[in-house]
Structures are given as structure tokens and as C-alpha cells.
Image: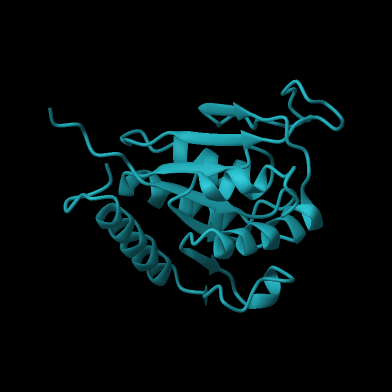
Amino acid sequence: MEYPSRLPVVGVMGSGREPHAERARRLGEWIARAGFHLLTGGGRGVMAAVTEAFVRVAERRGVAIGILPAAKGDSAGVSRPGYPNPWVEIVIRTHLDQVGAHGADPASRNHLNVLSSDVVIVLPGSDGTASEARLALRYGRPCIAWLAERGDVPGLPEAIPVESRFPAIEAFVREACRRRGDDQGSATGMR
């Protein structure tokens, strides 16, 4: 029996406060048109802006996934205020709470954000974004930063390539998805 190819999951990590609207819009639209799923942390800022742009593309195959942190001190999967943003289509609630500088802590949902992504794109952000980039390195996920300069994510590991031009981001993501598909036993795409 032949199964349909699994669409790649592109994780976008960035600020929970600032939307970086122009960059997020361009990226969200491109991910949708490229036929990929979008994964974010499901909150405000970059997460909301990229997801809104993604879901506004009428003819797309992928869905918008949000992996949510739990409300402080809650273990029953109750989301924090502001989560999920209105554009998340598949909500994954977690009992995990840690963000920011503690994003590599075993109790952080950042692990799920990275491990559930086939490729990670970093937009401007702070401690939580830098921790997701470090986790991408740790778990061997292809990761690239779309920044004007490395300082747009303080603490971004030197091993993460930084590009200011969008065509370089596109090429990196397409190649990473092609390689993941080949690594999973499919010559034609993800399974």
C-alpha cells in the first residue's frame, strides 16, 4: 500500500513580544505556498505574525501547529493567557512551563518545538529564541537565522548560520527538507 508523503514541518522561533511583521509575513506566506506545515510556540509576537500570514494563504496543504506552554504552576495543560493565538489550527497543550533562559531545562516546551520540526528558522528574539537555536544544534535539526545581524538574537550560537537575504533562507529550508526526506527512506520526499 502506498502512503501519501508526509509534509515537512518548518518550525519558526522568534520574539513573543515583537511581531517583526514584514519578515514574519513573508516567511509565513512562503512556508504555506511551499507546501509545508508551520510550527510555532503558539503565542504572540513573531509566532502570531507568521501564523496569521500562513493561514491567510487560501491554497495551501499544510496546517499551523502551536505547541503551548502551561499556565504557571499548572500541570493539567491549561494554557497561559494569550495562547494560542487566533490563527493556530492544531493546538498542542503541554504541562511544560519553562521558557527564556531556562529553555533548555527538561521542563521546557522548547524541546518539543525543536524536536517536532524538520527544520528550524530563527527570527529576531531573546533568551527563549536563543535556547531553541541551541536545542536545534543539540538535536541535530537543521537551523538557520534570518536576521539583519547576529545580535538580533543575543546568545545565538556561532554554529547557526545567519542570513539577511530571503532567497538564502528558502534554499536552506528546501535543501534541509530534501535531506530529511532522503534520510527517512524516500527518494521523492518526506514519508
